[in-house]
Amino acid sequence: MPNNQFKKGELYSFITGKASTAMSRRLQKNFKQAGVEITIEQWSVLYHLWKADGMSQQQLCDATFKDKPSITRLVDNLEKINLVKRVASKDDRRINLIFLTPEAQTLQEKSMDLANQTLNEALKGVTNGQVEIAKEVLQMVYENLK
Amino acid sequence: MPNNQFKKGELYSFITGKASTAMSRRLQKNFKQAGVEITIEQWSVLYHLWKADGMSQQQLCDATFKDKPSITRLVDNLEKINLVKRVASKDDRRINLIFLTPEAQTLQEKSMDLANQTLNEALKGVTNGQVEIAKEVLQMVYENLK
DNA sequence: TTTACATGGTTGCATAAACAACTATATGCC
DNA sequence: GGCATATAGTTGTTTATGCAACCATGTAAA
Image 1 (cartoon, protein in one colour):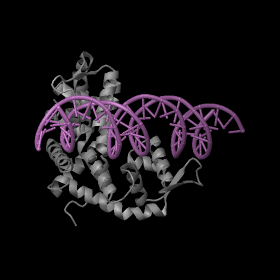
Image 2 (cartoon, chains in turn yellow, orange, green, brown; image 1 turned 135 degrees about the horizontal axis):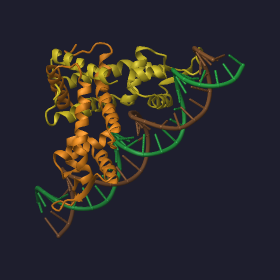
Image 3 (tube, protein in one colour; image 1 turned 45 degrees about the horizontal axis):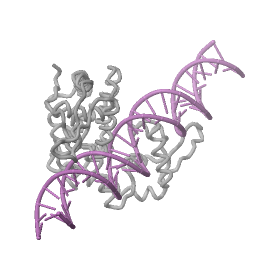
Image 4 (tube, chains in turn red, yellow, blue, brown; image 1 turned 45 degrees about the vertical axis):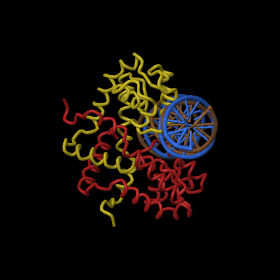
């Protein structure tokens, strides 16, 4: 039998990711309470644009680990609520570059604070050392499967 | 600043759960390749019924960490493809008990093997000790937020 | 330059999640 | 018994995912 055989009942939680579901729900709740009217998925796109504005949709796909249709529609919705704008690239007419609007820029600090607050709620009672190892494991899982 | 401040770029992955997304996709792919024609979410319901057949929808909500509408519709879809059957409880007419069909019972072994195989693909190069700690951390996150 | 192929993005369709509003049944209390 | 409240499940709406098919543009090779 392989090394990492899971004990009864643990396999389910590991595969289905109850922890990250719980984190998404809590972040969404914290956004709502603070009057930040975006979804977690919209935030996940904005998150990368805050780090590097003007990414192409394909770059957003890679950064967010979502597929092309998902990004197309998230960008559709973000454009509707006026948080981003598609701009056709001049070098390559296939490419849409996605730019933040001023409204989106003002959301950055507040929403990043809420994300960090959510993380602190999530990691209460967990030591730094444990978190480091958990991050490493999740990163390896991701690398193994992506 | 709190204990577990995340370094740049790590917060995103931890909150959005790239690792569990990758695992779900891989499991779905492995199901498909092996001719197991169910979705991961359907599997997640069957998983608990294999452990205890005849659970109520509410018990399935708690076990799967999904809300009531989600379970209603997953059970709808599982009934359509003839893998479960709703049976009204005689003690309490509000309750639907969910029972596996013979078809669903034959799926158990194959799909659990595929789930374990997927986990082994995911955990390649990760030590047992690291996995134990990661599971503890994810469990604590879940307990902190649920 | 024409043809083939690769890349970036969109659309259609089925499944699923989150949230609110709703129905039906059960329970507890006066 | 009758009323308030809690519990179990359903329905409607919006958002998002996964997959396949598709269109437009770019690139490279014959």
